[in-house]
Structure formats: C-alpha cells, structure tokens
Image (cartoon, rainbow, N blue to C red; front, side, top):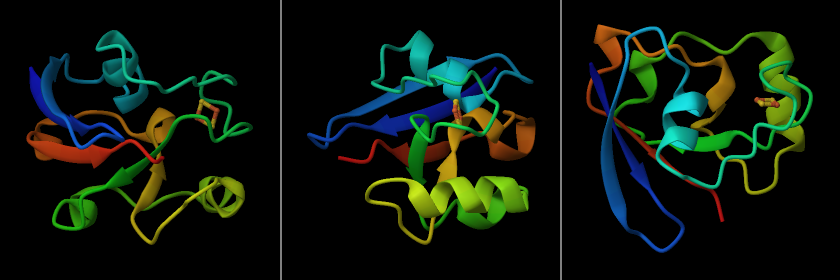
Length: 102
Ligand code: FES
C-alpha cells in the first residue's frame, strides 16, 4: 500500500493508504476529499486539482503538455499544482503530501 497525506482547506491532515497503481484522485475520493474528478481522468475539467508539497514535487513524473494546459485554467494553481487523475501511485511516491486548493 502507498501512503498519501491530504491536507484539507482547513489545514487538517489525513493520511490514507491506497493500492499501488491507483490514481491519486481515486485515493482522495475514497477518503471523502472534495475532489470532483468530473471528467474521470480525461484532462478536461481540473476539478481534481491538488497542490503537491514542494518537498515531494520532484518525485512525481513530469506533467504532459495537456495537463499543463489544464492547470493553467485551474483556480488557485501554483508551481506545484498537478491533476490528481494523472498521478499513479507507485512505491516511489510513498509518503506523498498534497493539499486541497481552496
Ligand atoms: Fe478531470 Fe482530472 S478528473 S482533469
């Protein structure tokens, strides 16, 4: 299992375990995090936007140009923003911390 910590808009931290190969979006939704994921991973909505902890950002595979384009439209995006539907949880990402944008 891969551990991921979600930091809510109120600052509350919740650490969850997800199966290797699951998306970060699915892990967040399973925990009840407010990630809509309206387009189900088609990179057409940005409602799955999360802000990755700066210390963890370099561990993620780089975003595809389509993901970058969608992040340009996401409210409150930062330099470490990603679409959680595009992130597959692998052992290399164990202990990842991400914040839910306000
Ligand atoms: Fe729509 Fe991620 S679920 S872009």
